[in-house]
Image (tube, rainbow, N blue to C red; front, side, top):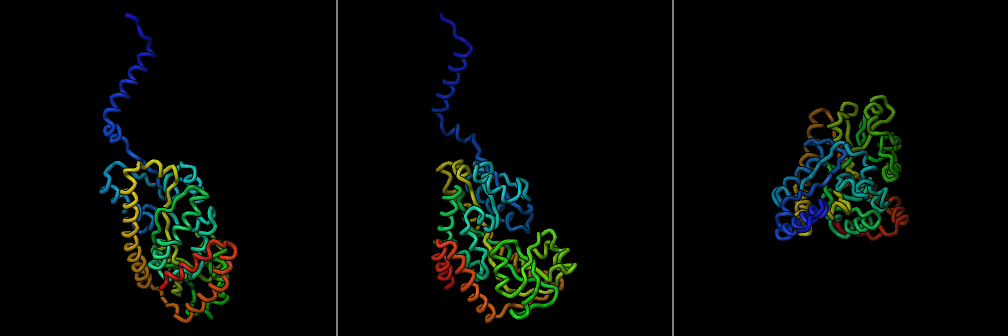
Length: 342
């Protein structure tokens, strides 16, 4: 009887094992868990919009597919700052990411339209527009340039408004007021057109800047003002609600390819359901933050309908039209946003 080498023995064993597994394909698949690395810049906290959305998705997935898909959540910039994580999602070392839409304007500048002042009237308006041709077109642009897919558009905890040390209640009163804004052209131009003096300052320096008078105020959402204790340095809010910034959840091509075809419908439904659930929570959290700020001494002044109409016309004539000229593909998207307002 001829002898066989160790190598032949190992090869034969591997072949036999493969044949056995081929006969039981379901058994082989059942042992595989799909792990998705999911990044966020926010803390893992119930008062963080990112974390609330993640919790809903985790729960929905568990109910739909059990342990077949596992989310490994990395909050608080554990995987790097957002600009770095975007690149990691592109190459596949990070599978998913939740963030504001602004960061993706660095990849697809057309998404910058979502940061333009007074574009949306509410998160309901934003959701209606972004779940239609506006969102699908922006997603197609991002996909073609990066392979990154926007799976859903969720909400932050309330709109951004103007917070100041001295009361501001109208467009004439905002003129000459030094406001801290994000260092992006959309934010800077929005407040220039309103008559303020936009002053880009890192968020970490904002408390001291407001306290010492480097700025007279800032623009942000109520939940962040409360969480960061910025109500200690300003006592007045003009409810401009100038920006209903969408929260986006994206997945890279390699991340999507990890999910077998038979699990994708359940995965995508879990994503969609998480957004519907999170939007309701976000609305409640935003209102609760305003009420808590009132309790702590903040005075709120609603923006008048006349001022809102005036400033929106100014934005449309100067800011939105200029953006559409720079990025012609967005021209029909502005019209679609307007149609969704009805």
